[in-house]
Length: 372
Image 1 (tube, one colour):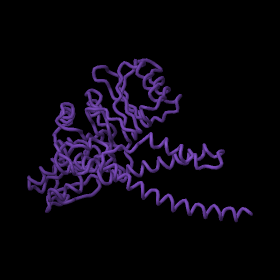
Image 2 (cartoon, one colour):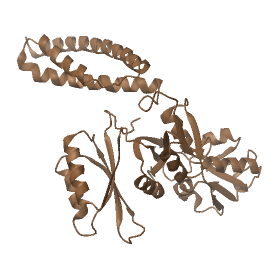
Image 3 (cartoon, rainbow, N blue to C red):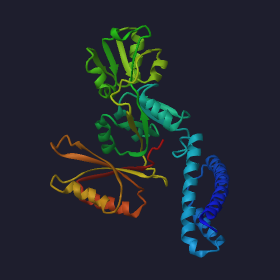
């Protein structure tokens, strides 16, 4: 046979593989639904080992055993990912405490960005509890008043929300999830207002900062509020043509406001990362991101020594941030995100070594990184 004939034969085999793959994934969907109905874990290590041993028995050419094992390990990984996707579509809260209706804390009132992130992440079949500052949310999670808190943590344009970095470091709480929300700020006003009528603008401090380019040449007074939703509510209730609010398009619908100008944020790729905080660590099998906070001795080479612990073990560092220690001028707390799971021996070894070198160390959480 020449190479063209061989390739035709491979094409024919691939066509059959695709059909079988599609059939297998259809059955996987059924398994996902069964696991959802029966509150079962997706990962079953015993079942996977049995399957790997069984398929090897079917193999005639044992020289291919190693490759067959790799093929099925990848196939099972795809199956687990697909099961997670189908389960999340039907029940966003499945990977949390799915034996009861969850109570979730968020900042502001309905329509705030925190409210939107909460519903996108957990779905709407939850009990909701709103607060007007972040410290109260952390306290509510800490004392068991709510199951989880949804906290804006950092923004792609303006960076870390320092107060919340401080709170997660100080409180006896952990990060158990994250959500990335695309944020588009809009200038909202009374339904009869025009841009030239505006003299006062209301919003949370973050939208003011994230829309600074648009605002810099406007001779408007700025009035920071606890949330964008509170700002929109204030403008709506004032019935004034001179007051405007910065917030989402959803707020214009909720509070019968007019969108005076769309997308006033500095960047068109403006994302806020929210963290989900819990009283318990809740490290799942699919957790693939670790966050830590630490401080080192204030001398040359200390931070390099910490980073080297990851580099020499081939651990991927996703981000590093430093925030000042208020009581110690020119000294900093560091926050690092890495890829991986704490059950990986090389990660466990690296973190143990890092902790021994630090003045302060806290494992903030090991959770699943958000993917669209």
